[in-house]
Image 1 (cartoon, rainbow, N blue to C red):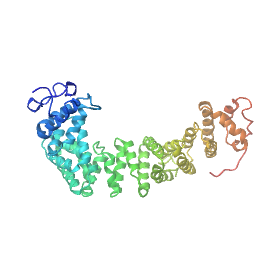
Image 2 (cartoon, rainbow, N blue to C red):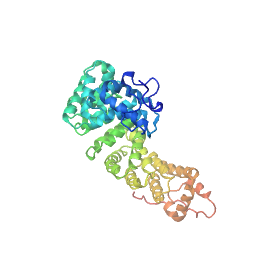
Image 3 (cartoon, rainbow, N blue to C red):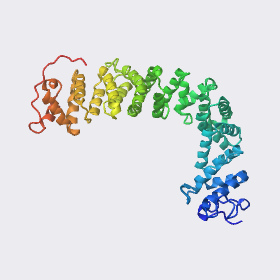
Image 4 (cartoon, rainbow, N blue to C red):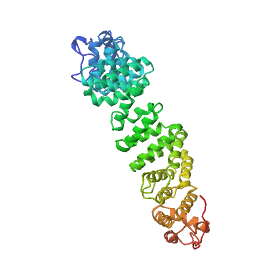
Length: 465
């Protein structure tokens, strides 16, 4: 038989249909004789696919590497045409197509399996059961991977039961330890099997099983909150991926769980202060996502800030002292809340910052807030700097911190020295008790006439803040 269709549409060399399924050139291929030959060629392939699917399907999967465009459809390629043909002609034996795709280690085969999981999850559930009982290890691995892709699209209890049965079959094989995390993910997702398998899943998760991600446990937060939160606490303290675990836990937090989640986060930061940066980064991103994120974040952050203040700051053994974890958490959160962020997040940032400052006395935390806010051009920057100053000058240590910060910000942050000079000129007596020698020297270096002299410090009564 002669070569099918134009050379430029044919698959690459070495990836051709066998001679016994090739079709003749010219007539009878579905398009007019003067029509586009590539379309006639694809029509002929489709006819052969319907007539001999078992023979043609494996050869079409070999076209997945051919990215040449089709002349009649420049946005399509030989590879996408092969995908489309296999998808469109999956009947009358779709199970056989699933097996053909499972035999093909190509991303386009995986894409087709994913599309079929969305459109026909029952079809994939049956395949997962077959593969879970297969003696070939790679087929069992495919069973778990494909089950995890399919489960979000499952609606029927019977299909969910098929996936859970396949997961139990994998879990029963000691040699498949690497697959057990995925199998447990499936069993926890199914309300009918969750209670029985959750303890084992929590042990895997707390131990840092990379195949059991944090979001696998979020369905169980509603039904078994104490056990799940305890496992998250262990993962945050000892396991890898603390940032991902924190994001998942915070995303799943409801108002009713906020205080318990806050306790887990505080404990994790106390034991591993570096975790504070992950908490703050998460809060920063979520605040910029608009009102929906604000509604979720506020209960959690309120619980964190209200319960992480210094309860025994004079004791070196206090877990909430400046050397402890929660101070690191307040400092990291303060740095985020003091920055303006997106326009939609400015009001909630200021509300939460106000909550933090209402109870804060740690000079290190207050210094962080001041330095984070200084580069901004917010209208209320003067009020914020003044408020932080009032909190800091209550102690000699704090006064020194405030003076040093103002002097350094005046040198390092463009425009800050001029703004500070303007504040001092506009309300000199408001700042008289706050400004130290370092800030005065910074102000004196401003151009002549930029600011009026600052009155000497005078005793002022404590100002409630």
